[in-house]
Length: 325
Image 1: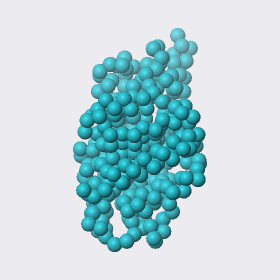
Image 2: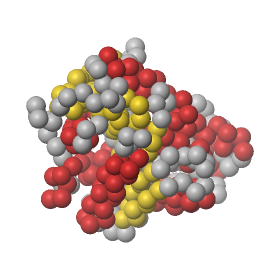
Image 3: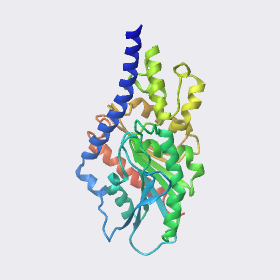
Image 4: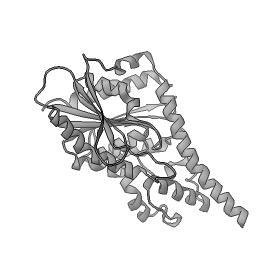
């Protein structure tokens, strides 16, 4: 019996560690791949582009800081804000890693913001939920700070990649109703949108065994930031408990237009998650564009033309939904 319990414990630990390590590897692979067309979306800030104001506080935590990118040129009557949230598996990463895409957004005339959030460590027990609430807390501060600088914001979009994609979806689908200005669209790539046990097959919790349910409970407890008992897995009680971090469960007919991309061979964010997300968007009549990368994993690096189409569509949706009304 003792050996069996030890085996179960090892299974649970492996599931959690694999999840965290895999997300880190996936992020690295995505960042190092730079196809030639990507130069268009990799702008370096200059006086002609605009100015960056760094590490503006929005809360009491050490990580509660954001960078604000403001475009050059004379003041306009109003501006659109585009927030891009960094990747890192919820345990690493920094807003500075997105400087090029934030600069590109700024070059298009948007106010752009990169927001840091408190990363999870073994000591602080932060979670996807606590991180999402920090992002929610930051939004009014971002809009307020831009206003103080003379940039009136009256609309916004939110985006991110991987872990940042998860947080972007949570804000777009769960928190848009509380945003300081209307949320007009969302774009993201390879972010987990939900935590249905059956979707997480690559980590093992999907199997119909006691050990698998225990692994699911432990893994999703870390993500949710509160204890989940194995015996409530796959019940309505579990659904209610996990909904605050499951963006897909918030999608309805009022959800914002979305552009999303996922790799069929993703070994970090399970592909079944993409299928469930697309079905929810379709069933609720949301205006969305989905790019399925048939040869790629988490880095989306093996479907160059499709990745380019994804970015072109992001730009089209920004032009359409973030234009002046």
